[in-house]
Each structure stands twice: as structure tokens, then as C-alpha cells.
Image 1 (cartoon, rainbow, N blue to C red):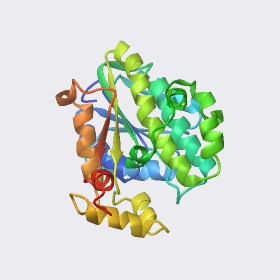
Image 2 (cartoon, helix red, strand yellow):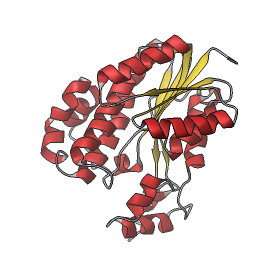
Image 3 (cartoon, rainbow, N blue to C red):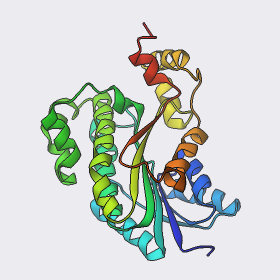
Image 4 (tube, helix red, strand yellow):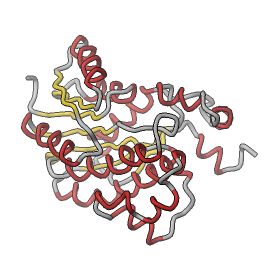
Length: 275
């Protein structure tokens, strides 16, 4: 082993693999995913590129499973970096499953890894620009999303009334909740000398992103991309570069916030450029 530092990447899709390549060069990688096949494929690829990789299956919607993953990471060494990329989009799953993975799963990862982070460590949660498009929430509802015990999140009125049956609403509210949960978790992580932030990607050229572009909402998404500053789809490398920054020493004064990495799509929408 080159080092006693551990970098955990949860979710081995396109963004997860790209982040692992960025942050795993001077650390031992612990990859986790719900799919054993995807996990081993990604691990084999990274090992072939010279990375030291350990794998572990995880169900992010299960506290026991996430706690076991966090404990396994701590047993391997000093947990210095955590990147949580696992998520489902409205074209991939039902509202119930999206809420379980994108909302509850993030809350559990923040809580369980907040107990094992090493001093100087950092975490990143992959959220979405969709979280920035949720209309302002009543103070009580926002506070509940930020602070309710993880196991109570799925029974909050905001969830049962607005998101329980609509995959699009479930996704957007879950991603807004990600921003709020990161802000709320920042104090607990700080007590261990660690930082945590989120990244909100725009439309990224991954299987999930391409699925969205091929959906009934694809035309409006392409219009947003065309109107944006970048004028192109994002790549996993774009997100990995942002994650590398937030997980590294150059961002030591950045914590408890969200970094919007969407090529300017949100700016185009909010400025009225789309008409």
C-alpha cells in the first residue's frame, strides 16, 4: 500500500469512475456500488491503470449497509476523501426509488461517514442543477428537509404531498434536499476536522444524461444547453475536476456549500435568456 489514506467512491458510473481516477492516485480506493457486475468492471479497469482498489457492495438506502461501508473504510485506514455519486433520474426509476436513493441515501452517507472522517478529510455529494430550480420552500419545510432524522425524511409532508408519486418532483426535491443536508451536516463533519460540499452537475454525457435527453423532456433540455454559456453537454471529466478541487487542499476554506457545474444552464434559465 502506498499510503494509509483511503478515498471512498460510492457509485461507479461515469462520474464515479472519473472521480476515482482523479483522487485515487495517492490513496487506496474503496469503490462501492449496488451492482456487483459494475463494481468489478470498474475495479478491474482502475487496477489495470495502476490504482490500488478494494470493492464493497452497498445499498445506500439501508443504514446498516452504509454503516458497514463506513466501518470498512475506517478499518482500511484514514478516510480522507469521500465522493458519493450514486443516484437515479426520473427516466430510470419510480418516485419511491428515487426518494430512497437520492434523498434517504444521501442523508445516510452524510451521517455515517460523518462519524469516521479523518482530520483534514473532505467529502463531496453529487446533487444536480435540478435542486436549484425548486421554488423557494417554506422555512418549516426547508428546516425539516435539512434536519429531520434520516429515517423520517420519506414521511415528511413535503414528500408525501408533492413527491411521492411524481418522479420529476421526487428528483428535484431530493436534489434540493441534498444542498440543505450538506449545509446541516457541515457542523458535525467540522467537529472531526473534515469538510463536506455538494456539486450540482448540469446535463452530463453519461448513460443517465443521455437517457434524459432521449426522454419527453429532451427537447427542452437541449434548448437549455444550447442557450448556456458553454453551449455543450458536460463530461464526467468536468465533474471530476470540480470534485478534485473540493476534495483537495486548495479548497480548505470551502465547506457546507454547493458548486453549480452546469455550463451556465441555470444562469441562462434564471436570466430569461430562453425567453
